[in-house]
Length: 195
Image (cartoon, rainbow, N blue to C red):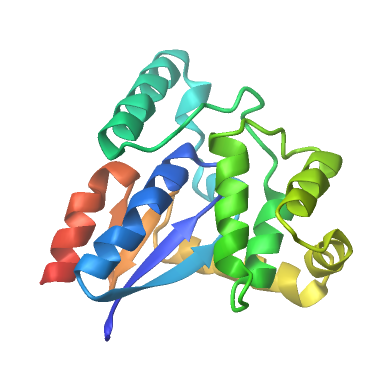
């Protein structure tokens, strides 16, 4: 399997959640491997001058409707989080820390579902601890992981790499040097993998 798709994402992005629900199926159909690239969307926004569409009232209203349309099309559960925007620094450090471990896939699932189906306020450390504990994670180990300097640097380096490669939001996909932005562009991702 030598075809790959890089998936730059942040848990705080509802479009990243929708992409996460679909990308494994697309990759499997194209015999491609997903390279998971957790990044800090806030850092990307700051570096690029971008911002969440929800901060523009008319665009935000449209975005909420559009996300619901895509969730229905994909037949996946989704409830927009009333605590949005969520500070995802700790969550994304967790993803960076678990990235090459057996816990990564489960961690990603737990975080995305807690935010976008269970509407948890993951800006609060005590809520994060409750969610992780309920999912069988060792919360003391998690706390140690997200405070590890190497993990912090790894997340920072991935975010900086994303910016250098032209990323301005999440989700962003790369097939080789070809970039695609947005969960509504997954058909282009599938086409690129098919080539």
